[in-house]
Length: 205
Ligand SMILES: Cc1cc2nc3c(=O)[nH]c(=O)nc-3n(C[C@H](O)[C@H](O)[C@H](O)COP(=O)(O)O)c2cc1C
Image (cartoon, protein in one colour):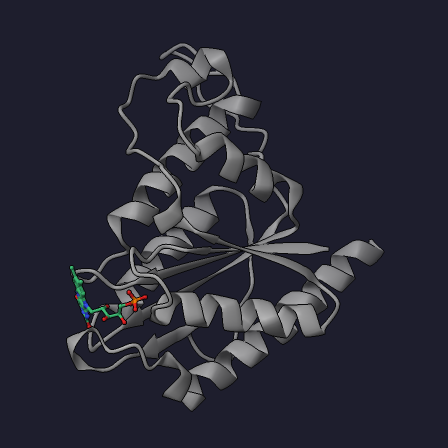
């Protein structure tokens, strides 16, 4: 069982990275293999809407997208972490999600004529589990969280719940103090419990 955590912050060792790594560490303690992907270290351009993935069955833009796609495809679970930028996820993460979601759909589905209704058979992510984590100084955690949830919901992930939202509040001026948000971290403890529990249940099926 493997969970990939994606840190959508352009900052090294910032709050998002801390929170995603913290959750991965709790999963590791429960016997889950983990991997952190720092998007700041990858090249993932935004979707140019060329639609070539419809025929080619993969995105034709030559950067690190395919490598990340294959890591997610090989994993059982996904954590998406983002700092809040103007009430939304970062452009870094949005670029990744647009291309994963769009090219992913056409990897396993055919585009049909305009007169025909779609009957999608799934996505490359069908049945994988996922959860978002967001962090802000003050506001926008829920809207960024919703943005990530909506992507997961339309890409056939099984979304893992929690007894509170997986989010944290950081200090002023870009301070990196997510480790001090003990309530936020205890929510991530429970998220890891839920993720590991669900992975075990799915494995037994
Ligand atoms: C461009 C930009 C936009 C931001 N927008 C918001 C915002 O809308 N609401 C908020 O509370 N904090 C906002 N922040 C603060 C970050 O969300 C906060 O510092 C967060 O902890 C950064 O995460 P990181 O340490 O992982 O980079 C913004 C920061 C930047 C650089």
